[in-house]
Image (tube, rainbow, N blue to C red):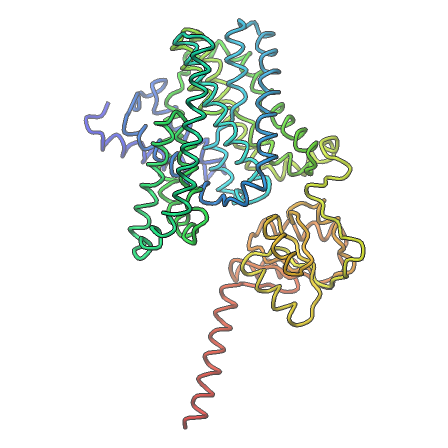
Length: 551
């Protein structure tokens, strides 16, 4: 339609900006707006974007940077912490969803082969969309966010193995060929992990130390490393997502990860715009109408059944219903991999166009609806919590760290042991205060417990966890978490428990601090501003002493 690729990209970005502005005005998710813009620009409506290699390239780069940033935030101790539950919930959800989905597809009149493809397509969730939503909500580092990212990566690995198996069968050779392909992929995977481990140990720390002398060069290397990791994963038979994710993990243990992650966020979000537009443009609305009834049935199963399966598994493993619910919502849609799987089945002659249209329509419905479910997950949980009791053990031992018998009493409850919280805890303990601290990072809990602190593992956002704390004996509850929503939920939980003591919270700005004071908070901290004022006072004091000693 356009003679110039530059003009086409300009039109796409301009319409995406208009669509995003309208979505923000109507308080709708940007992801849904971008997919809608893609449909508008696609062959089903205007035909502006039919197939553009440039848009596809930008989309792939955005995916690589997204998973690279996720890998940056997942240090090795986090992987060790959530590994068992991620593996169990990921594989368990894949198994149960595929079994139930297969039976549903047969009941809807599909052939056994088509039903098998549909069932497998229903099991995989979109790592890209979920991580983007969790990042926007600042929940990637929460307990349920870490678990969700863990089992989404497990799903990505499973879908790679499934596609390798289908391709092997489609090319002939039977079980022998399939066995050889599986053996090769295991060898390649082991080689890739070994290479990453060696680079982490011997090469990357020193290399980054030298590159960090120039922030521009450090960012250039980070982008190149992300793209090369994605390319290596793709070349070895894995997905680009797995390769980029491993590239991020490889430098997650270095002191430069926070700087790299912060600088890449804007570029990542811009490039991901093209992924969502490409996803919408690929939908052929004309072929989807006949599949509406069956797609609604399968969509309801994905939107409701998949989260229930994850909740049941996590509840059995000893996690709270709230954690299981929030993590379970992340599997309430099917993945772009599901559409790729359908296209593969069509190319191998296993599927017809109607079945491909059915999977595509389920993808459109579930991605759109689950976006709202995840964005409003906390409100949903508050409404549904009374009916979710069967998904939690009487003693959710994974998250319940009850005070030990004989544990010393405390008069300050400190929420959060990050850099600011740990420094505050050390100062309070030096001044003789008795502390009980709470943090959701198991490694932080273990480290401070070894240092002699009383620390409980838990999520201060969870009202049920707050109810288990010894609030009656506390003179102060102090939150060092600079997240407005978390602090609001903590205040609500404290009021619900009729907490009689005083409350102090951290705020990101003076305006936010004033808002908390109006809600009855006794003391507010604005960490950077407070530290700056303290530094200025010390400078003034030192200057005055200098003038007195040198008149």
